[in-house]
Length: 426
Image (cartoon, rainbow, N blue to C red):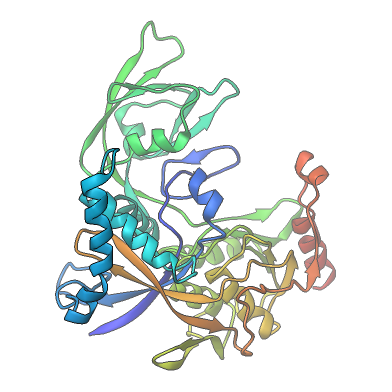
């Protein structure tokens, strides 16, 4: 039995900002990801296999029967001719086998002129998988940097760090004996702390009132990365605000909980914030769009070899009638645009903000023999009304820009406009 699931995002890791100026030790946006998340934001198709009790899903394996034929071997003869000359004559150091192989693969893929067809080495490939699953091995603590670059820790309730004795305000000095310096990138610190579930990590902290640094050994545990946050707006107590930062396997269940809690608190309308949401699982995007639609098509997909495939609205939506605003901007991409495009086509929601990124292609992920991954563009997708958004993006119904002055004064005119719109259009 085989079905399809879909996803987005390149492999880098870091800490998701949660809340302002804090980082949850998780998979999220690293400095590298911030730099390339728009350029390499991808909508990826993951093939699911049912493999027996206890099995989850496996990315499509394309190893055993994919040996090159004689013609393909002959076509690579020139490559080996060049590389053997390099090995014989090159004055400098020759990279080892995997480094050279990975470089050759990237060079071949670059000839396709498609930034979304890419090769990912084993370590970041594993991080990508954990990111899409929304879970990894960590200690369960927030990180905050002060002006001097010190790393201040804040344990999450009932997580491993708190249970091991970490206190809010402890300053991180070292991880497994390796010193943490003020100029060290936060993502490097997180890499040290993260690890396989069940393995120990010892952190050294400075604690107010303690005479000397303390060593705290913590067993890494499953840490679930939230993709949604929600609240009733203080300035508009009848409006429920939901920020969705990615589309993971857990997102739709989080939305179910958000609607239940917000409705109990009196929400009569909703703001769904998709700004800077680079995407995630396509199947989750279909589920999210279906939270607001009774029937119809969520998106259409056109594959070179298979023609059109239609993804229909799924029953069971929790917010089918309440007034709805979507906040979007240039960082709203791929799976986020699927949701926004469907709700805009059906006039189910009003889009407020800035034009979205415009990512309308689909990629398959193949897991290779050494646990590396290959993303291959295989299709384009279109909105229910057959609008192509690739390279164009979605134009909001109400355009509201955020100026540098707004940012400097911590103002959010897009959210303010959404509140005004819902208040005036009850």
